[in-house]
Amino acid sequence: MLKQNTAAPQKLNRRSALLGLAGGCIAIFRLPAARAQGAAQVRMQLEQQALIIIQGRERAGLAVTLDTSPAAEALKARSPPGKAVPIIYLAAGLLSIPSISLAIQEMLRHQEYGGVVIDTQTTPVNIHHDQSLEGDLVMAIRADGSIEKVRSTLATQDFLQRILSGSGGKPL
Picture 1 (cartoon, rainbow, N blue to C red):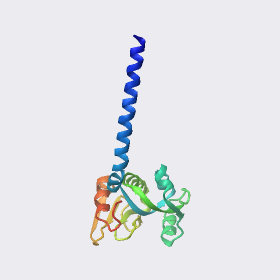
Picture 2 (spheres, rainbow, N blue to C red; picture 1 turned 90 degrees about the vertical axis):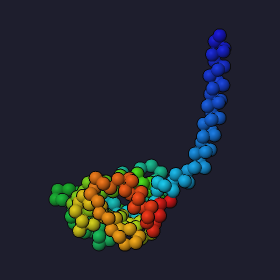
Picture 3 (cartoon, rainbow, N blue to C red; picture 1 turned 180 degrees about the vertical axis):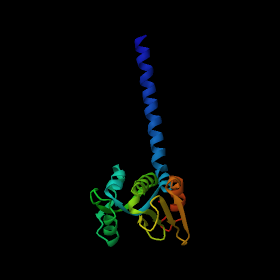
Picture 4 (spheres, helix red, strand yellow; picture 1 turned 45 degrees about the vertical axis):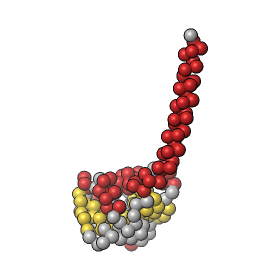
């Protein structure tokens, strides 16, 4: 009786492995379609804390450089007294919508740097702080020049997907 019980799980394991392999092959062939709906080429101006939010393989695929532009220097000058001067980076590459969303939410957490602009008129899409905006606003500039402003609570992944899907930078 013990032999029958051990034989049945082996058959199930082989069957499970074959089903898993077949499912994996299907997933691999569907990966480009899923990625097309959930990622975009972006160029983001981030401080170190927002850059840390981007994890794993996505971060490895980014080109990250120190931002020494006048805009970055202006952000540093707005750093609150007693707080360490931030390091501003430019990160460019393919990011998933969830990673973009997390990075933007981290950017919005630091209201002293102003709001966030998502400019889809450029390729890649340019995302950066803007001191002329309130700290909890996201302003999206569409490829056609139209502008949409939303509060941070409405800057969801669905909002980003909608904005980026109509961009000149097109989600990949």
